[in-house]
Length: 316
Ligand SMILES: NCc1[nH]cc(CCC(=O)O)c1CC(=O)O
Image (cartoon, rainbow, N blue to C red):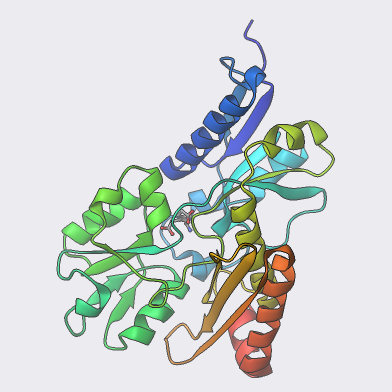
């Protein structure tokens, strides 16, 4: 008989999701002697709705939690103890009884540019075609370069880079964090600065979700929490929550800790998908009030947009 695991981690089965789950397992084994034993941590792969839909842009399907619903069900029914998520894919609203307890040290939050025709976005020839299924990236690409065409583009990293090599598109964008975790960062053409392409809320952050009443798992996970990353993600998610964004709303936000200890700087934007309008805002304040800072900025942007623009962007 095999010894049953002490801790079961639920994850999607994509190469990126598995890399993240193995990073969590490695960090936990380093932090706790009993979790270092073989089979002490079991990685449980769970297929989500988002994994089954490969042919359409997620923004067309809509709905929140495409990558998290089935994993959260496994948490609630006790078949796993913690869920490993790309925090970018986790809705701000969580089911009753669940919470995000832990954020790992955040990877680079920026987006990477890939092209065989130019070394940066601004260098693409007039009328070039960029593949991206993200409305956030689409809106910011068109803000900077209204002459470009953005087409829906999905699939894993390998698939996208093959399509790029075959000339289906002239360029594409992917999160730097995912490429680093997959050991594919060497294929990046260049990294987009955040004033040109503000990242998605929580991009580059891996988080763990648990049952709120599970103090045993909470205890294990507290050793691998990165307070600075958690504060940044809290500010960005609070901003998103106020803006009530779905994956169909082009929203970007990035919180960074200043060299001045305890000072958190948050930038956010909301744009029309076609890049015809953009609303930007920035706030800074104490890292101890990260969520308040995020909410304030979200409310400021809401007020600036007015009810009509807000309605057209967030209601579906
Ligand atoms: N929506 C898919 C997704 N979720 C997280 C990442 C990248 C890793 C991260 O942001 O932590 C990606 C792919 C991408 O946007 O390139």
